[in-house]
Length: 153
Length: 303
Image 1 (cartoon, rainbow over the protein chains, first blue to last red):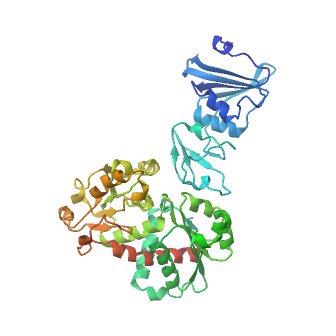
Image 2: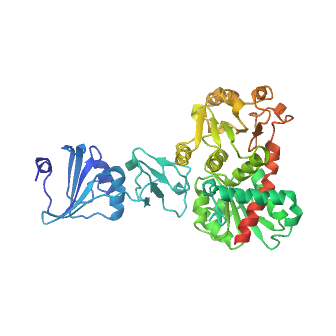
Image 3: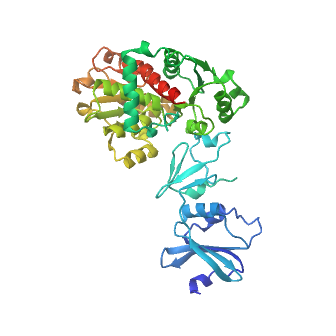
């Protein structure tokens, strides 16, 4: 175990999301819907020195494994992140996030004139580009602050 | 396949464009030969926004093919007023008509509607998004007057909100046209359109003044600067006057230049241009009939 990982306490079982770009940990929590009211034990390390990223954030969530949708959205703001599944203090599985081709129902379109912001039975759908996402309906490209557009639903 | 549902000019390949325009030319030459093509067909016109040319030209085109139209009428007089969703409306109308023409103020509305129906559906304008049938008639007008070879097009005015501009810019990449965009900085092409042009490898330049490129143009496509889009009236006045053309200004243009405009115009083309050989906008509007006849004929035939 490295000194860096000791900065955040070990968890018994759950998920460790490592190699999040520095400053993005709170957005990862927002993606996971964690605001402190849901009862999970959560540890967060921010701006930890990292060989690969310069500085990185780490999020450890006790007793929870992530859905593929959650991992897909995390990949949009943390393309280098790794997901570690922990059971009984041991890493059971470790994998890098992969950017999906599209994400459905997880981001809101920032264009107020987009049909997905009307009272219509339509889920948002964004195509994932190299450095951005694009609404499949109004074609608006979102490049910056993608986490701000995560749906509240 | 676009022959089922045409929601964006981006769906159209060069072969698709040529097929529609060739068929439109055939109809243009002998419209009477197509008068009984669709005597048993009904087209539904769902216009959630005001329209004169598009609505009437679709109605005319359908009737000239021997078919008929049903019209939702104004939004105020329809179930939309009661809160019915667009998704529900198109699903109901699908059972009444053989095809749907939709104009709606929200971007992406036609894309969404197309997911709910199996009958042919045409996007007749979705907010600041796309207007693919306007593009087809624009291309028909260009091909007829100046051709597609070594084509240089200037597009001037409201490039940010102008859906006809967005569709046309996409389609002009299929004919390898050089595209010059002339607008105030506040009304430049949106990022999504520039992205598509870049992806298509288009030859594109942006300008704030027309005079520097006017002599090199084969086509000058003028759009209205939409006063209602400006947060401040004085900002509108600061740019509006710079984007007006008149006969004197066009003295610097090539003799073969054609001036186009999707209409309605307000004051961006002075009346003294109307009498010159440059003026092409009324012919352009008339071309909407054979082009929309061709499109409907192909789509309804394919059903």
